[in-house]
Image 1 (cartoon, rainbow, N blue to C red):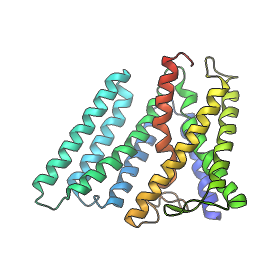
Image 2: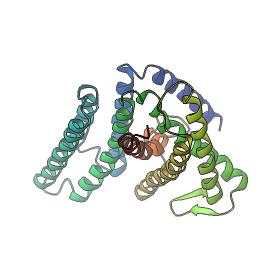
Image 3: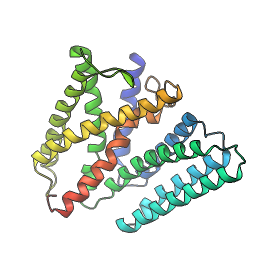
Image 4: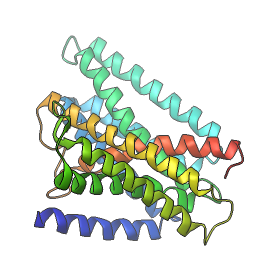
Length: 277
């Protein structure tokens, strides 16, 4: 417990520093590194890390799409470029499977592509949220605040009141009571966050939007946590990595964030179109 606490405090302090300089190149570099490490961890989990050409293909595409978030300002053009790189990556992976004479199984190609694309999309969404004009400097923080509030209070509520297991076949320690507690406190946390930033920024969504967003984010973040737990159980590993002592790797720590970021991005784009924010 002491190791987990120390790691959490140090990691939080580093995150605060990175967020302070989120308007500079520091932020995409750090997020890009986290994405690369996450891809590395996932490839190791599904057994594709030792395939040199496949691994390099993933790392190159990840690096390129992260760089493009700083160089392409038009959102539609970036989405087109991102989709094109993913399609090219999938074609390359299938081609490798074809010419490997069975050394690269097609099922591993499929699972590695799907899982790594999922991870990459999560980190890319964080950068796209931060790059949103006039809103990015506060809205991207919801991606970190809401899932971690959910995780923290789900843990404590589960310890205090947990009686009924949520999905024991995937995550034996999670309880229904913990899940509900995480949702309730996430709603409260998002409303408080909305009230705070309302004192500094104009044209923010009304607080009821933050309340609904908090509920949805909490549910999605918990499902995201369970998704990564399911993958770990399928491949028989305890943690994805060891970057954060006591917590595991990048994917162990950012599993909820990866699931949440694309959702928040889509919701924000919709609210902008509807002129709610």
